[in-house]
Image 1 (cartoon, rainbow, N blue to C red):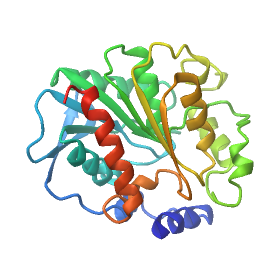
Image 2 (cartoon, rainbow, N blue to C red):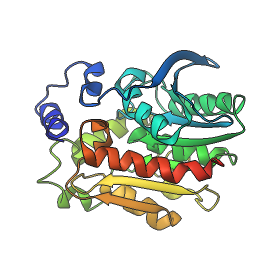
Image 3 (tube, rainbow, N blue to C red):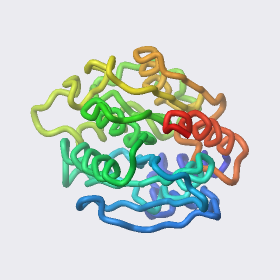
Image 4 (cartoon, rainbow, N blue to C red):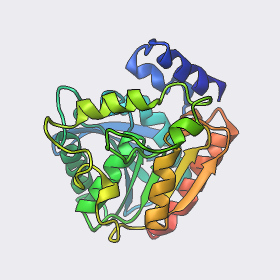
Length: 275
């Protein structure tokens, strides 16, 4: 977990390093095969644990503020989820900002999800940070989603970012500040589009049709407000891991708390997939 904190501290100081280095904090899960595929034109990767159950798939959407992240930064973390749940995971990426703005990211996520439906009877969605927000937007457009498993989901696209969690976590979250998140929103939204529009901000959409939702977040992260608000609006299960940072599950295989979180996700999602 020290490596997670150190990574965010470096980022806050302006040293982002190489994109693929994000995954260095995650241990190899072992017993998982990786196969890159094209999901109807969307770059994706099958994460297949040995002995995976048939007929069930989790589509995972990685985080990165829409500006970064990839199949390679997140394959190991979602590989741990695939192994713990005993199901195949289709990890999908999407076009990045600022070159591509909304709705490109949601279009790619929808395409990957629908492609996975052609390969399985039951499909759940998982996502971390911006990928968690994308997962919710896919579920709002696709009634067939079996479940939503979300890790520190970033939902609110309101440029004002009024959540008090920024103040509460000012001393513990050095990177995800209100100005930084506002800058990411500015790159994501097309000119003239409101961050309160339901098609970009699920907090202003009708959430009554969502499938079962499970949300995890860190107690020390400024994004905790989004997780708590989503859980309140949907009646979702919410687990707040005190003392932990944004997407601390990236330390899977190296930190017991990350492994515990992954194990809870896996145990929760299996029955939602009929397992």
